[in-house]
Structures are given as structure tokens and as C-alpha cells.
Image 1 (cartoon, helix red, strand yellow):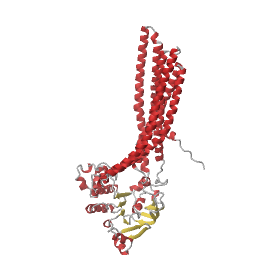
Image 2 (image 1 turned 90 degrees about the vertical axis):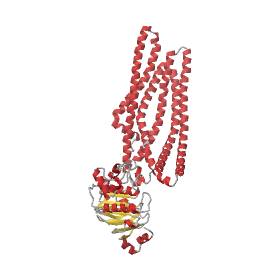
Image 3 (image 1 turned 120 degrees about the vertical axis):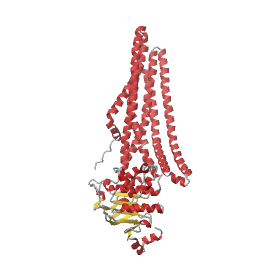
Image 4 (image 1 turned 180 degrees about the horizontal axis):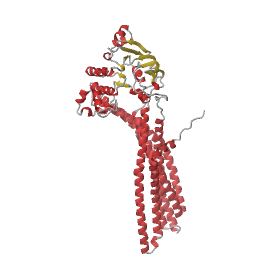
Length: 581
């Protein structure tokens, strides 16, 4: 079997220039123009010193004024060139960074719960921020730095060869040593930079985790413990930085020394050639003026290798993330579904998480008709939440199949499938913003009147109107300004607005006080009317009136019936009730 050829990474990276190729070539043009200007000015100085100063005063002044005007024009050209490559070049980098950020964030949206179960938010955040910034800096500065450096280095070298080839060769030999030295140090810095990135990602993750749970931290008085955890991560970061800075110190001090050495070599050799009459003073001045044009490109090229390492390692991480294929996708023959009736059937369903071969669900068979209200009970770890998570395909079954209205859910477009299902969870997630925005999340196209109707149906309207700015009240990060019951009712209002034929209540009232639970329970029962409903419950009050209760154990569905029927069996359900369900 012929092995598929891997795409060239540099070619893929260069592909991001395509939408901005006009800007890219303009940037290179002005980079070349600016480099050419710096080469021309010392030649004009040499001409003045060698030729103009020996002319009659009147003639010399006229030529000096013309050369001066020409130099001013060159300054204007240099200013314009530098402005263009600084502003428009950086904007090109920003556009590319924007495109890549859209690409990776869109990819994040496609990845399943299984992926996020094994990831830290800080690491994902670093790939979409610092990594992409380094890539955009490489794509902006890289080509122009190479062009400028090559033009200046080769241009200065050939000009200096014409001035005095022996001095040029001496300086060029030192430049080669300088380049080798710099490349050796940059190679050592590569691994240190990668370690820095990993440590920064760890710190980002820890900060995100600590600040997101700041209320838990303060409630337990564990600020000191969090500081200790952060300090350990921060020390590892400093240790990684220490090695990097050691290499950087060697690199920068060596580069400065080589730059000075070239100037010293030019002065000593120039003085020698001046004394034996083989070099003019004007040529020595010209030579010294070109020294900067001779050494600056080397520094820029070596800095480019550092920049390349940063950007390319960031691109490696970008590709690594983009190469993770979503494990839950639409099948090639998946069909759209506008509105489901709500009949659900589990047929010999088994499931285990990832590489863990221990089955959470084993050979489950279950049929739920449209409008049924099914309660799921069982000890922790019995698979209640997992069973419900399989219906919207947050995870895919390991074996068997789940059918919606007689169609395998894997043959329904994922977006259409999830439109049919509303989920109200115990841990409600509300976004930073207003109450109106959070309820409208259930249906982004809903009008204000529809949002208000949904809030009324969820028993949320009264408390919303008592807020400082009613529906326009900002609720803070994750809804911190609201009580648990209020957050639950906003979550229910969101589900009302979505108006799905299938509902999943995942322990939606287990964390509430009795009064809040009563209000929320009323809202849930109103929402559940004429919908296929699955309720995961730890409180007996939420399921006592359910016409169908399923008791899950590690072996699957152990018992089924009403509350009275299951108590009469004196089996698993009765034992759970006795234990305080």
C-alpha cells in the first residue's frame, strides 16, 4: 500500500499569505527599496570626499546642494518604506493571525467532550494567543528581514570589495565566524524556548483554574494553598527561563563582541593601508560607514532564526491541534431533521470512555415514546448521566445503536440532532452578559417578546423585573450575581425558548434549597409537558410522581416501574430509598 505523502509544513504555512498576496509583495518591495537607500547614501559620501572637495568652490557647492537634495529625497523614501512595512506589514500579520485564530477556534468547537475531558483550558488558551502571535510575527517579519539582510549584506560586501578587497575579506571572515557562533547558540535556545512555552501554558491553566474557583478558594480559606501551588509553577517557569537567558546572554554578548571586532579590524587594517598609501582616507570613512550595513544583517538573520524557532514551534503546536480529528462527526450520508417527534430507542447499547475498557453501560435496551417522562436513578457511577449524554452524541456508543423516530442518530446531522434536545443541568453555565442575552442563547433569532414569554413560563419574570435593569441587568462572570434557583430558572427559560421535543434534566434541583426547588420543579414540569423527558435525580421529590422510573446499576437497567411498584419489589430501588434517595 502506497504511503500517503505528508504535506510540506512550510508550504502550508506560506498558504496563509494567499488572501493578502498584494500586501505581501508590496511589503517586500518597500523592504527592498528601504535597504537600497541605506546602501546608496555612503556611496554619495564617498563621491563627495573623493571628487567634489577637489572641485572649484562654485561648482562644488552646486553639486553638494544637488546631492543634499537627493539625500533628502532618499530620507523621504526611507521614511515611507519604513512606515509601510511597519504599519501595513504588521497589519498583514494581524490579518493572518485573525484567520488562524478563527480556524483553530472553529476546530475547538468541533471537538467532542472526550477531547475536553483530557485538556487544560490554559494550554488551549496559549495555543490561540501566544502561539498565534509568534506565528504572525514570523510571517510578517521573516520574509522582509531575509530580503533586507541579503540585500544589505551582499550589497555592502560587493561595494567594500571595490573599495579594498583585502579589508573586505578580513571583515567577511569575521562575519562568517559571527554567523557560525550565533547559529550554534540559537540551536541551544530552541529546546529552552519549547520548555518555556510548556511552563507558560501550565501557569495559564493554573491561573484560570484558581480564578474560576475563587469563591471556593475563599470559602475554605485556602488562599495560601493556592499561592503555594502557583509559586511552584512559577518557580518551574523561572528555572526554564534561567537556561534560556544563559544562552541569550552568551549569544548577545558574543554578537556585540564580534560587531566591535569587525570595526577594530577595519580600523587597524585601514590604518595600515593608509600609511603605505594603498588606501584613501575617504575610502576608510566609506568602509566604516558600511560596517553597520555589513554587521546589522547578520544580527537580523540570526534574530530571524530565533523568531523562526518561536514561530515554527508555535506552528507545530497549531498543526498538532488541527490534526486532532473530531471523533464525533456527521456521517457522509447523514440526513437533516427539522422537527423530531421524540421517540427514543436504545438497542443493545454499550459504552466505555476512551482507552478505559471498563464499560459504563453494558447492553442497554430501552424504548421511550413521545411525551414519556422517564426518571433515572441509581448509585453514583451507574451511568445515568452517561446514558443521557449519548442521546445528543456528546459521546458515541461503543456498540449498539440509539434511534430517534426510528433513525439511527449517527445518520442525523449533528446540528439538527442537538436542536431537538434541551438540557437543564445541575451546574448551570451562564455567560458574562445580560439576562436577555443569556436566555436568548436558547434561540439567537428570538425577539425580546419571545424571550420574556420564555422567562414567564420558567417562573423567572418576577425576579428578573426586580433586578436593577430587569432584562438588561449584567449578571457577572458565570452569573455570580444570581442565586442558584435564579440561575436554574434562567437555564429553564433558555430551554423553553429553544422549544425542543426532547428534554434532559440532569440533577437540575439537587443543589437547591426547598423553596427554590419547589419553584424550579414547577417550571420543569411545565416545560416537560408533551415532550419526551429524561430526569436524572438524587431527590425522591423530583421523581415520586414519574410514571416510569428506571433503576441503573453497573449491569444496566436493573428495575423499572412506578415509585409504588418499585418499592413493592423491595429491590435496588427500595434500598436506595432507604439509604436516603
